[in-house]
Length: 68
Image: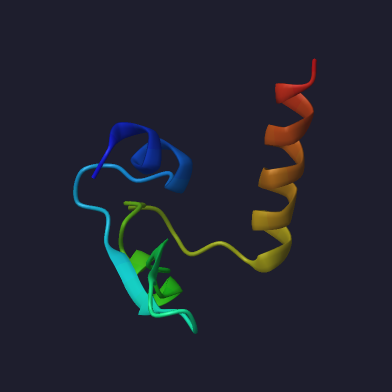
């Protein structure tokens, strides 16, 4: 697949794509969406579980730091 097409689709090595026949007999290609469940366990955290309020505050703090 040409690099320009890979770049336009946001593909990286290991990306999955889906081919679908269109109404004109051609094909369309799209990056395959990943189920959110596949992300489970992808970030390691060894501490105590955080409440939703603590997670929200962490996101708010991080965004505030990014714009200082």
